[in-house]
View (spheres, helix red, strand yellow):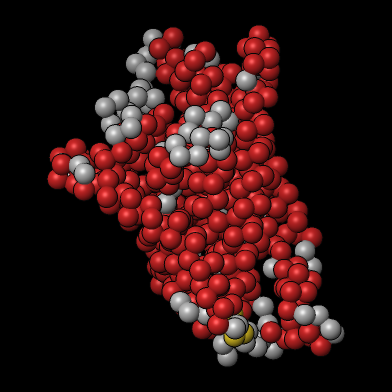
Length: 517
């Protein structure tokens, strides 16, 4: 299998990256008249709003995520063990669902612009990305480095700024970059507050001017910004050369504060948990109680079946594919396969609205070409083919990253030994790889499953006629100010989102227990 797998890797990588490549390729067929109109009217506003939101989210998530991680790892205070995992709970809230809770509050503060509300919603739901990466980095640091800084005259604040923070920089930058890319890709939150961003402008250009090519060109500017951020993150990570001062790991010693300091830290840690998860959850429950039968009617169950069916089909199809590709790349590593792997990850860096454009352009071209040639069109744009294709392109990177992380923990000597004993490729997979990476594969299935349950913009554009999911219906109802009816599907999405949050918390706890030796 390994010898013949190069063609499979190439085919899958090209197909998965095709929507993004189509969007980028649209630059070669510009519509000068429409672009002149966009530049004279809305393009500057789109770019300015997107840039300001991205910058504010980067700063906000950095401050909240890094400070929370540092306090959890280094200080003892009431409720610390609970906050260690509770600080990840806001990750279960998609930004557009958190906006349902915030939007009524914005009426009491009319002087605050919509852009700031969008930034606030995204910060509160995205800071856990930074918290997770920073906490894992701080846990991995040995106390030896910080004690060495203290002996050289640094106080605790200086040791944090001059030693701990630089050592954790690659992980923190990765978390901030993910949060920033998610803010650029956001559609639901900005659309709900009526903020004009590049992501919302893509659909406005498409449906307002009925120009799919111009929409793709506008989308390409967003893809370029996201890819630039991704390249910057990789560049910073590759240049980081911070190492531990000792080969012996010593677990961090928790510091005790004064009673007032402990109380203040507990209150500080409570803010993101209460505001980012507790109050919105209670508000959704309150809204659901105002709906007849809590909104649990036949339509709700139909939406749940639609969402669960799509999520299960794609997750169970995508993860085995990611496993096969990862194993083939491991058995036959090369620069060519590494380049293809990087190409296949473009989808996750591509916003859902942009990806929908990239899927529709080739499918429309295929159907149009078949019709002109006298053949029956395949109808991929009106069925589930386009939607599932978009899901595969969008979330392949999630599955591949999780699977490859598990594969790295399997020493190469194990498969080399199996090969010398005459094991075939499929026997090697079934008897060696699969048992050892079963946990990683399960984690990948869960993460892809939950991501699809929460996905909004691509589903909104590509879903078949008269087919809805929980995410789309919740957004439609909330946009119509029918918040009580939107509460039940929104709660279902949030509860589903708790699955990977609790799994990640368990994995980090195990990591710390493993270090304490």
